[in-house]
Length: 355
Image (cartoon, rainbow, N blue to C red; front, side, top):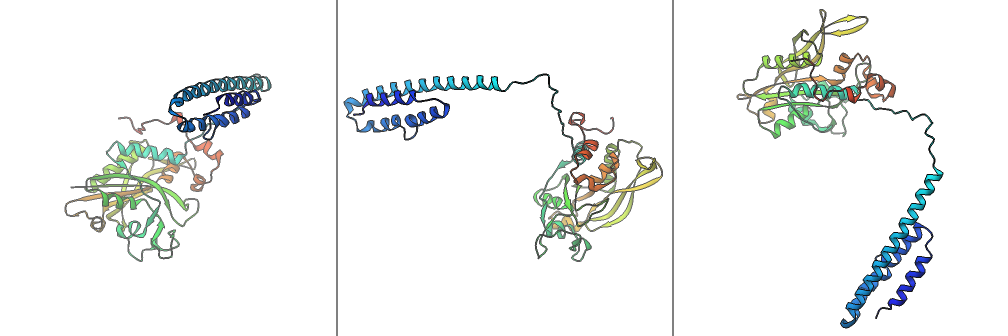
């Protein structure tokens, strides 16, 4: 038999000794915790004779429910006292000046990535991503880069092991390889992301941002590439009269290859893009090399493709008048406050040119 009278006396004594919320929690645990007196009493009902068990259980439930009600009332009472005490001791002087609200700004690189993504999405490109840490095959070999190419040297590439098998990607082109290995044509992607090279001056930093573009399908040619880039550059720089030209060049992963120049002039010691008779190189491009297609198991007799790569940071510098690439990564709040973008001013669907 469970001595219920003794249990009631214990409850009365404990409740009378409560003077704070801490005491209340201790009392709750003492009776209702995993090893509390009431919890143990319910467990011990199995040893009570069947004729008495139902009565004992009913009385225990009454005692338990009464205790819970009393504990809840006490808790409400002490919480109310605490609130009133805080109100009396923590008065607010509403005549004081309000605190300055500091709003964050969108970094120019993030802004340009949003603009580029929106522009290319309008002509059917989707966004692909890949890891910053790459293997040597995806970064160089699969892209038809010769074994002794200068880009593979230690002074150009951050290798992460002695065997030169793991590295920080030097461009976002490895994502093209990963995408073509997983998917069959047609493939139409852009790849914005961080890249890394051993270089640092006003126009180079060890980490920077690139955007790669890739379109693989049947009957793709240089005319398609030129039309895509012209659409992109005119929309990005918001100038329908912008002049663009392609110059023959060489890249291991494209054949034929070309550098892309846009027109500009110098006015008040600043570059004005789209006007004048000077030419400024902005990106590289070309038709995907047949060896690259072979490395990703795509039949180059049926499919062709074009690819291009552009520096996101340099696009931001040209469009928004930023003179030093290193300032993008110095974390100077004053710089970001000047060159950053208010989130309320950034359109949800960027369109550089009116249709």
